[in-house]
Length: 511
Image (cartoon, rainbow, N blue to C red):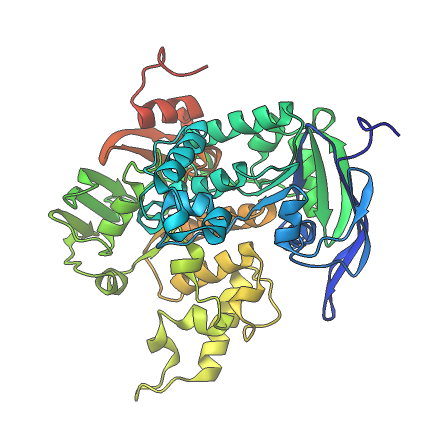
């Protein structure tokens, strides 16, 4: 077999168990030179385990790994790096108190460091690799001072400095803007032309079909399909991933069902400003409505939500619920009035990973599960968790298991259940399906619509325009901390939302 036809990376019969749980069951996978290969599957399908085996974090129980046609035993991440394998994890793992340049060239800093390190040269090299990604980040800045999207780009820049044959990217665009994602894909296409093999993990079908050559689907720890993407449709790929028909991916909208809004808004926000990122925004939310908030990263979407619910201090403006002005100085005030907010950072602010499901769900509603003397009633806590878990179709090994043991989609359901336990009248969801597989996404969409059908006012902040278009009855577009426009469901399309978000005219929009 010639060098051209020999797979760059080949896995044969890979099996991995963790105790009695089998994560992988005889998986086969091949990566060619000069291809972007999508690895697809629901959360818990085995994708992360397979990537950790390629990166040497886990050793397979059985099976064979071949690199350039030769069998290899990967002893750990450092060994994988020496073999030319680089992995960019979905979870950011940078040193917050080190500079951007130090993080990008961390192995070099650890090896040399101190007085021997040319930090001026290090900063210049970091600036060059960041520029390749279309970024003008100050390489001397501490990483902890950067927003999540910039930290993700530093992770990617770090991988680009390695002499990789194989580059693995796990949900790299989850925290990126459209512009940042486009810059990343330009680099990936360059690397593909240079002969690098790229394994691309994403739940975003549009990205996969636009930029990848082939897709391998894992389901329940087995490889169930490998296909050229030019030969299949997104529907067929999703069906292979979930093993079933999803039915309607998005539930019917309010107007599509012919409902009429009740008189008077549920929530009114008037001229709200925080003096920093939000500059006088006004809007209304109706009962039973799913209201979208769209805009580019940094436009002020999350800051608007945080100001409404007291997580950021307002400098002016009013928040009214059913016509009555509220005094909201802190988040607990908002909760008392029935306004609940789910942060975009699920693991940092949505759930307690090292606590059981039951304790997570009851954490913000302790009065519901406590006696009149303030003593926690464990039976009531368990009952509440089981009721909400059943309502949200939560898949777990019981409400006493730690949230860390759940898939990303089920962790998100715990975070939603935690808010529902407070009995909210207004639910604000910031990136509710980020990092969640297609099956769980559809379930969450139906959960949110079901809450709206029960009279809850739902606000969804999302960077995924197809989600905004498919789910929301009406969308507000925020740009530079002000309201750039409002679009009704019947008028929503990606071009219109992007024009409002970017401030570009139709003639100025990139083709």
